[in-house]
Length: 110
Length: 119
Image 1 (cartoon, chains in turn brown, green):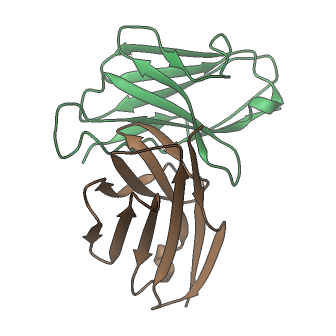
Image 2: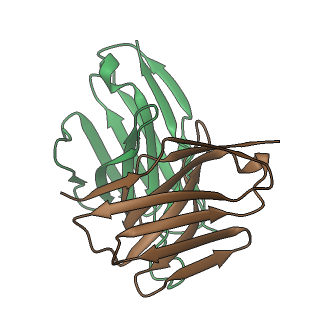
């Protein structure tokens, strides 16, 4: 069955550093991979989508890579800020029908 | 951007009663909406796909008679948890996609979620 794993449940970093989150998947050949941010008690908010033919995508301080050979995506937040503290979810699929990883809870300390 | 509104944000009900959760697309028409369930510290699990004007499609293991879904209009889908039990306590989230717009038809827009507590 299709499986998505995010490599750590929690990640603590110092403000200003780069946070790197990992998403691995198996038994799937996705056309898209998406990253969402979820704050406590709220629904996920879309951040970035990367297509299978794209290696890297950037949006402001965010960068996503997609390696279809390794079946892995890396999500980077550069110059991290305490406001970036949240749970980050990777998801496979298209539109609303998504399979989610379990999320990585990022905590950025001042 | 597209806005999805979910109501109520929190609800407490007694065991055996039914609870209805509404999901509305505010500035677009959604022929398809999705319902997810999330347990604490766990991932979102897709429960069902809500189709306007037709029956919902449920994921394996989700009881359709327990979780009734109605999508009577292009902007509203409802999820009714029937005969609720404490184990139904969870965070329920809906989402929708914007149809027919190339730059937006792959990302999902989520409601703010409903925290259901069954006592």
